[in-house]
Amino acid sequence: MFIAKSHLDLHNIRGSIERTKKLSDNIVGVGPLGIGLDGLLSFFRGAGELYSLGAGAVLLYDGFRARCAPMILIQVAAIIVLDTILPMAPGVGAIADTLFTGHKWSADMILKHMDETIYFEGARKEAEGTAEYRDLLARILAGKEKRRVVFLG
Image: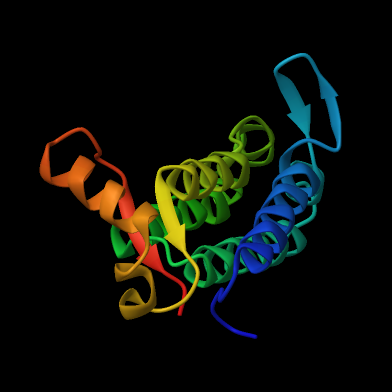
């Protein structure tokens, strides 16, 4: 299954994003600071970059599956590119990459976007007949609702 078709799919995507976030930037955490595989592998030339690109690709894939807006995916891609090239800076690259939690930042951005989206299972035509959709449409037209609406059908 490629793109989310149900709330269960969205739940599983959310879990994948949370796992990638924790593995990349917070395996060992003390308060708000943490270090993950991205920071540890950045001390080994090539391994850090490879891991960073792979974890970033997983986040982008999950964001696409969750039907995130293209602008969010572009911003996530930019953060991942920065997180990947940061260890290449001479002298302080690996240490800077350890402190720059780009995967965590990207994952939080995708999760926030998912939280700000109303997902309806099924196609638009199926939802149009429901009271829930009519109430939502009335709130949108009245300017009381600002979230995006996505139909999973």
